[in-house]
Image (cartoon, helix red, strand yellow):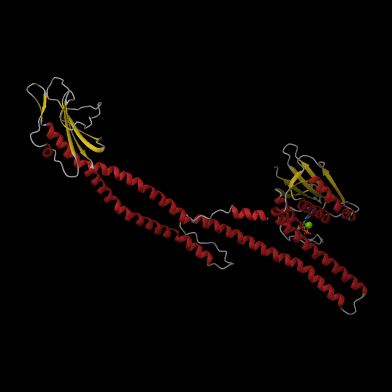
Length: 486
Ligand SMILES: Nc1ncnc2c1ncn2[C@@H]1O[C@H](COP(=O)(O)OP(=O)(O)OP(=O)(O)O)[C@@H](O)[C@H]1O
Ligand SMILES: [Mg+2]
């Protein structure tokens, strides 16, 4: 027990909060999306920042390209009339470089170390301007370049390139990112707050439901209103209502049972008191006293029997959960019960016997509780003994059978007698607590068969009642227990 307690403590599952769960599932994606949107914004901002400055760069290349001419010797010639800085619209933030190469790739003007465009690039038509990102003197640069074909004779084209460092562009991109991101910094906490508020509002009907249940009186088992809760919670309320309904039924049954049990005990106790009063009366003869004492004895036996049967039923109802299961040989159990009952059967002149398979036969075993199974059999055999008359003309015969189906290994037990039998309309009623058929003149509490049914159910068996035969009366009773095959 102690170690179980430890287990419970160590492996106790954390109780999860619905509120926390929804909040987690909404906020985590939201927070994950944010860096993604940051990266996307950065990419877009780069593109945007390039656009206006690229246009200026293209203009510069075009202006320089105008200065490339074909000399009188049919050689490519380049001369810059104005100062380069003027033409190249240099500014104070970025450095601008240019380069002009001749048809053979020879350097004609500008920076020598400006990298050449990728060799495999399609040169396009003359004066068509291309743009690329590159590196020069350890700095990132944006380069605009064009190839110029001045004569028709397949001479390789001249190349004009203008490069500009990226400072202005970076500043503009950073500005754009800042402009987009700053409002987001303010919006994100606001979004979290709104989600929080929406959740509080969404979960409110649950708190209201809890409040309504809490406010109920302890004996109020009326159904909860499933229209007053959101659609998603309605199935939960419906199942709680079904549970309440079952609880109500079970409470009614228990109350009825208690009233019946009290009544059942009251009768012999009242008899006891009456007989004691009678015996105490002055002038009662010795004969009367003896009679009263006999009645007192009978009433106390009856009260004790009822109490014992009540205890037995309580044991049977708790048996399924509390008592360990073991393999019980039904043939052995039957013979034990028959042996216990034999003296009383002989007193009454009854023939009590057994038919069926031998002990140890495969399939004659039931997983269960031997004490309860014996209790079940004892009740059936005792009933047969009580309700079967035995006279000199017609001896009462009671047979207990244990049969095993050779194919399915299903186990069937029968207790059969040649008494009056139980007519069809009574066969369900006799399993109800305290129900007793009239006219038997036998003392009893009406709990024997409910005990049988309870124990049978706990061992996966069904009980049915039949006539022993359909010939001339008496028909005899035959109780059949069918165990489910495992
Ligand atoms: N073998 C039987 N033959 C005819 N009637 C029977 C037989 N077994 C049970 N009955 C009828 O079923 C009723 C219910 O039986 P049950 O065993 O539940 O109660 P009881 O025998 O009256 O009381 P208890 O068994 O608690 O002492 C009995 O009153 C009896 O009328
Ligand atoms: Mg009985």
